[in-house]
Amino acid sequence: MSVVASRNGTPMEAPIAPPKVVRQRRVRPGLLGLAILLIALGGLGAAFAVTSVRSTGTYLAVARPVDVGRQLTADDLVPVRVSGGRELQPVPADRMDEVLGLRAAVRLTPGTLLTPAQLTEAPLLGPGQQQIALGLEPEQVPARKLNPGDKVLLVSTPSNATNGSDASRGGGTRFEGTVIDTATPQNGDVVVYLALTVRDVPAVVALAADDRIALVLTEAA
Image 1 (cartoon, helix red, strand yellow):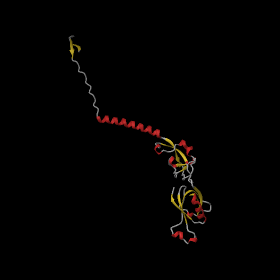
Image 2: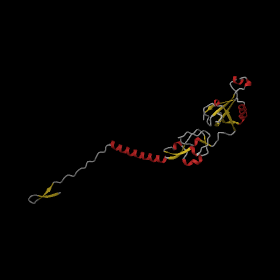
Image 3: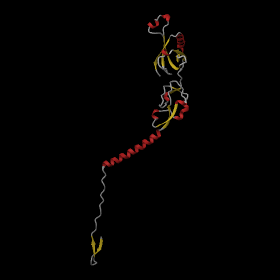
Image 4: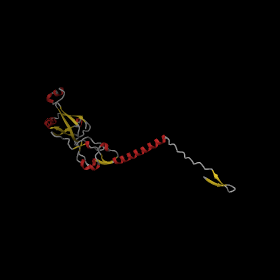
């Protein structure tokens, strides 16, 4: 109770002020849901940023074209920094020394990441095979350029003594081979180095000596 003085000095009771009631703010459900969503998105963004940083690494990329069967050198590769490249399983840049000297199992294209599946230790000349050199005139080469790893078919052609009897029967003997390399001497001819099965080598050499062999490209590397 409050006491105040009157004009004549007699104390009088003063009215008591009622307490103030503070109204609680009403939180809208929509705003609450939006706040929770923003917090969740912020957490996902932070997690994505951390994951991206962790998945960034330095890998080996192909710097220049490499044909099938070629051994890799340091000039063929270049280290690149890639984010999120683990899914491709590329070769890390610190394993450069491990891949040098390995052969390309497929044709390597510049600008692509190098993967272990693209490499092999096996040479194009496999077990049970021998290599021969076949000299051809430019018009006898079945493609503008033959690449290592190309699959070819060697077909025997009829000789003058047979009067075309082999041709009338649909051609002669066929031999399967794989291109290992090619060269172009100064005389303009094309030398094709082929891997053949050991048992086919004597027959193909004899046919080539008589200029009775034709080369057909069956599968490009």
